[in-house]
Length: 250
Image (cartoon, rainbow, N blue to C red; front, side, top):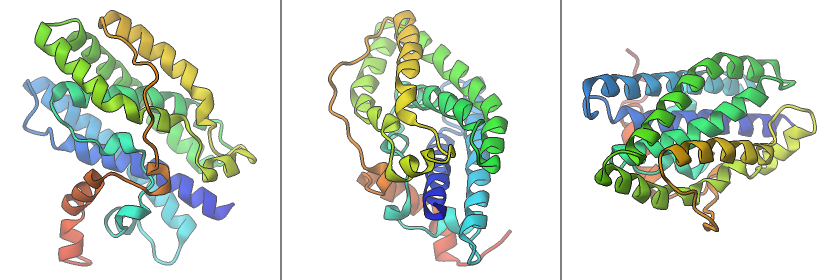
């Protein structure tokens, strides 16, 4: 059970860490100053979630593991994030849609994780839920704004849907370590979240004059450490300082 708990905690941490790294690239490049600050603050919120999960994972692992070693010294195949969060930022519409897909999922996940029999996971989820509530509202408003905006913004969001929807189903497929922890009410049965997720997505898409895609082939593997080549580029940038100058501190 301890190995499953470690894998699960790292999965939650890696999802947050990689998305935070991706969003941070918008700092100084947002379409307007207010939204530049908003996406950067969201990145910081998610990074804080990653830190909390990594710190907990480090205590479970022992052997001098730290939040820094787990973020900066693990290899591509060791990361257990879903494929969605490692997809390229692309334009503003694609980043917004990725955030909406994930925040919609994360809100439902943390809502359930608050009841976990693992007190540490429950506490992290409870603290993070307030932040994720804002992330979901913010990204929902932007999906509507872009979808029901100009012909250009509408088309860009349609393009983003075509590019990202193949990564949605993985969010709702339990990995072996999640199934193992369900026996002790530690993890969340993510398959049970999909209908609520679709209800929210459908309501926002209706306002945005967008369609939910049907019968899209699902790409999976991230939870088991099988990633796209994009994660390698993300880690090369994110981990450069620690790998080039080992044990460096501020």
